[in-house]
Image 1 (cartoon, rainbow, N blue to C red):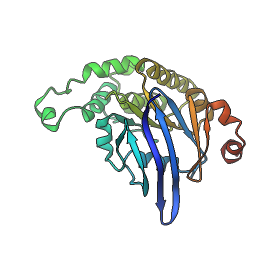
Image 2: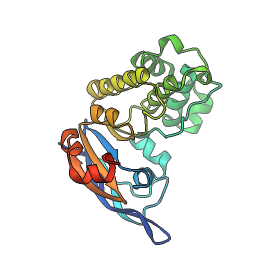
Image 3: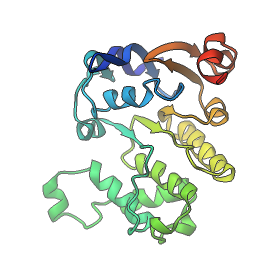
Image 4: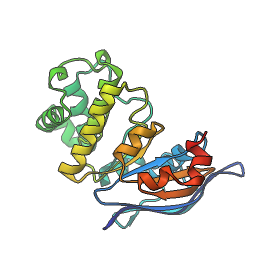
Length: 247
């Protein structure tokens, strides 16, 4: 199985404190990888080092075999890496369809093509497909700000897939979502993984969600990976129980 993402000995220090301490792992094509750990374990710092929001102190990140360490987030997006954030990135005054078109425009074409080309940059058809896939048809013309939080989470996820990324990093997709909408979100993520062989890395605190969605899980504590394996193995690992699940 080929590695889409390779992280090698990644370290990030702040004033002598190691938030991420020599982390190494691979993400394989078509995999749904979970990243869990207690608060302060370094999960978000690791994500931000991979995605260009933070410059790592040392180590290397490769995407499809190409070094991307320290590359800007916008450059990574154009290479085929998408992400969602803990805080929603939707535009509340725009409709669901307009949010998706805008997300597609961000990753396609040059500034010149946006100025002289079609107003939607040819993204309406793709937006409509994503609306159908995430079952947002009845909300397509509604302003994003009028949607429930769970519906906005679905829209946020749909926006991340508008550019057809090879890899998407999802930052707490289940946070604040009620159980009904959570089931819909999990179903849609599973389906896009099956239909498009989309590859995910998921940071999540909702253990039931991550254990039922992910095929493999890494556990981070104090900036280091302390366990890795399938959900059943991780759930029963004594180090994980002590560091995270047992708290």
